[in-house]
Length: 69
Image (cartoon, rainbow, N blue to C red; front, top):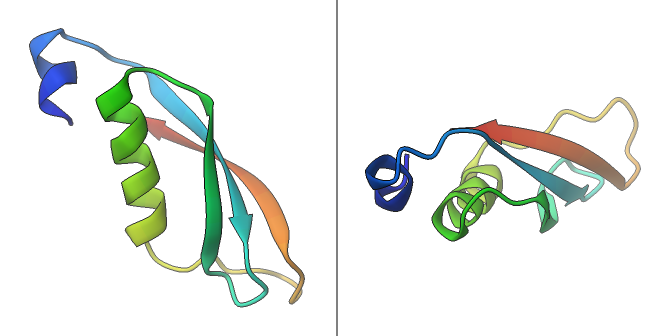
């Protein structure tokens, strides 16, 4: 939880669109539904540094991910 969100008692979720490579790695992340600047940045960091996604087929995909704070 980012410090700004804690101090201001901000709760909610950040929705991001993630472009995936064929091997499940994240290639691009865009915020679709922002919450606050620090929360948005933290959501992007979490998605980029998280584990690879498991794809059912080896095609590039776009997915929507929600990160709750």
